Image (cartoon, rainbow, N blue to C red):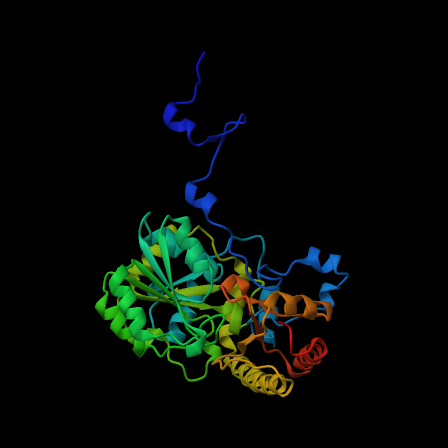
Length: 385
C-alpha cells in the first residue's frame, strides 16, 4: 500500500516520524539573542561554570531604571486576586495611559512588553515578500519578527564616522528606492544612544503614506527634552513605549502602542486574550500614579551617568556621546572585555549581535554600583584589543 499522506502534504513531513515541519520562515530565522551574556539573556549556567554567584554580579548590560519601581507597585501587587482572570482589554490601564498622553483609550493597545507588540505588528501588517526597512544598528527583534512573516528586511546602517547619527536624507533616499510596508526606528536608539527630533521624520511619513512607521520610544523618558513622535499627529506613525525600562517593571513585562485607531484596532484583533496579566496591569497603574518617583530617579540617574562617563574618560576609555544613560565604547574586542569584566563580577553588553563586535554597551547604575564598574575597568586596563 502506498503512502496515506496526500502528495501535497508530504513536503512538510520530516523523516520516519512523519512530524510536520514549521514554516520555512521559522526554520530560516535565527533566534534574536538579547541582553547580557554576549548576545544572550543572562546565562545562569555560564555563571555557574565560571563559579560566579549570580546575586553578586552587577548588571550594566540592561538599560532599565536601576532605582527600581515606585514603592506603591509592591503594595498594589499584594492586592491582586490571583484566582481571577485579568481584564482582557486592560481598560483601566489604557484609560490611565490615555489621560497622561491626552489620547483616547481607542488609540492605545497594551502588550506583554514591546516584544509582544512587535510580533503583533508583524502578524497584522506583513505579508510574504513585503519590504521592511530597519534604521540601524538597532534592536534585532524588528528584523526577526519581520522575517518570521516572510518579509524582506533591509537595514540602513548609521556610521561610526558620523557618530552613529541618522542621516535623514540618506534614509529618505532608501525609502524612495524600497517603498517599504513597514519602517522600524528606535528613538532614542539602542544601542547607540543617539536621537532624532520627530520633525525630521515628518517628511518621511508625509512622502510615504502607505508605509507604517513604527517608532520605538522605549527610552524616551531617559532623554531629557526630546519630543515624542506622537507630536507629529501622523496617520501612519505608531509609537511603542516600554514600562519595563523607565518604571523598572522588566520582571512583569509591560508595554503599549499608541497610534491611529485603525492601526491599534488591527493589533487588538490579533493579540491573544488576556495577553497582559493582572499583576502587570496593577503594577502599571500604580507606577503611573507616582510620577514623582519617576522624576526623582531619572534625575539621580542622569547625574550618576554623567559621573560614570567622566570616571571612564579619566581612566583612558572613550564613551561615545549619548542622549540617554547608556552608551557605547569601542574597546577593540567586545567579547574579550565582556569575559574579563564578568570574572570581576561586572556584566556589560557585548555588541556583536548589533553588528558592532568591537563595542560594548554600558548602562549607568547607582553611584556606588558605578564605582565598582570603574574599579573593574581599571583592573582590566584600557587596552583590550
